Length: 112
Length: 111
Image (cartoon, rainbow over all chains, first blue to last red; front, side, top):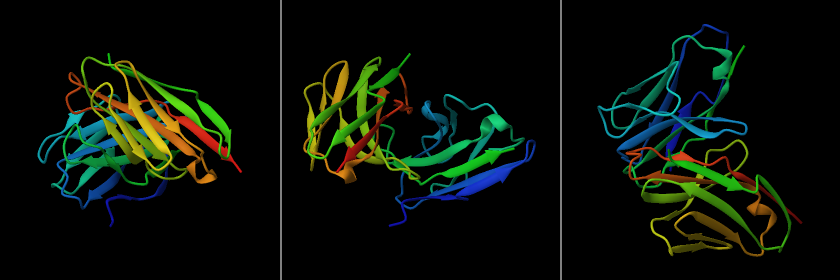
């Protein structure tokens, strides 16, 4: 049971570099989400996709872009990384908006 | 604006010492309240969903309850393996597809 798979698990970037975080789910879920988790801040929603072909901004979208590639995959892109984007990034999926979310194990991203 | 707070921030219990974690919320019409457990270095793991005041759910040593303003996660006779961070999240009727997470309670159970 793979569930939600995130790659990479760890990454170090320099300020100004770009990268894409990958997420895939094998549960045939409709909704997918990207969060960041910082100490003392809890999980904050960056972007979400309620269904294939749609994406919407969450609480902290600035500096990020997303692509819902198909029903299984939802990627998060940092175009020009900044030290303030150092965080742990979690991808999640759910069958519908009011259903429990299933999370991956995160990508730990450091920007120097 | 939907908000979620959790208390205490951290809790240290002796093995077998029962206690409760609190989740207080402000939301315009509750669609659902969720409890998750998060172990270090892992993503949150779903525990319970509660939809209406008065509802209760149980799983092993955990019991979640819901009122119109708060939810409690009761832990009965905890074991060291219950040590984790417990997260509460709410979805309001005006939040559309968004869920708001609280900051969590870090629980340590000492043998």
